[in-house]
Length: 389
Image (cartoon, rainbow, N blue to C red; front, side, top):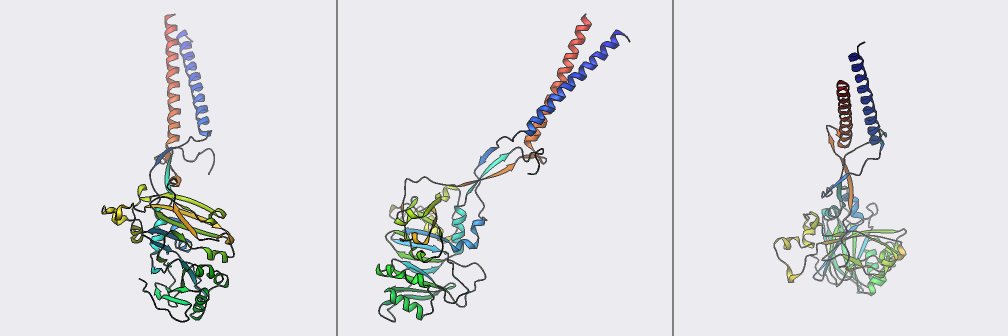
């Protein structure tokens, strides 16, 4: 074997050793990257949740109400839960003055649920699943009827309901309800007296006999004169288990509880904000009315007042004995807005492969290429040295 042949073989062996070292280093680097915890994803925010949210099902009507107070008139849109299997099963709604009761649209409660649902915060994930870690809710005034201690302000059919608006002494109200087929549980009946002594009015509600209840049950709307924003709950003391209330209070500012019962209950405010500031457009006629949307769109503002566009969502839980007062709400201008978010991760891929792993592969290939180039350069330098020698 000539000296030139031996030199060429030695050069080839050197190149193979350098290539093996470079390949081993690249594989170790790749294994470390593949086995490591995926790095934090980049964040792209701004999308909001689709109105087709699980919270907007018909069952929300059983526990949800919208409250608003404007110009001395309070509005309550209330979802109802009555026992359709028991003829005469009655819900009794006390109000401080005679209300106007009308049918409301279920869409009102669905939309305010959707408007205050958590916004999506989209997180972009470059890595996907590590392939090395396994699967991973116009009344006309009536004349007194029956006994003098009860006044029937209204008796009418409203949507699927039979409605009677009563005033007077508690015993008179009880007698009238019993004589007219309204069934009132004894524990609730016993709580009429404080309201009657304060001069409140009672709206008795039951399903009409011919009501079709196979579909979504519509809520009811109550409009009545009031000096403060309230939600009557003292009848909850007759309950046999803990109570949960889900209320949406509209106002010019965030709202808070000011009644004494609040200290004995769990009160949460998961949403405090004007949904329109977060890309929401009111479409329900009732919500457009209550939030002043129509006036705002035409640049009109009665008496220079601001529009009640801020929604404060209340989730209230308490034992029956804690509801010793009605809920009272007042402005809380110092409260910070709260807009909950839910993180949704989207994996960024190219041809179905997570970009992160493509970057790893590109890094490995780059290391290999550098290794090959380095080995070739070393071999060339050696050959030059030998040639000079």
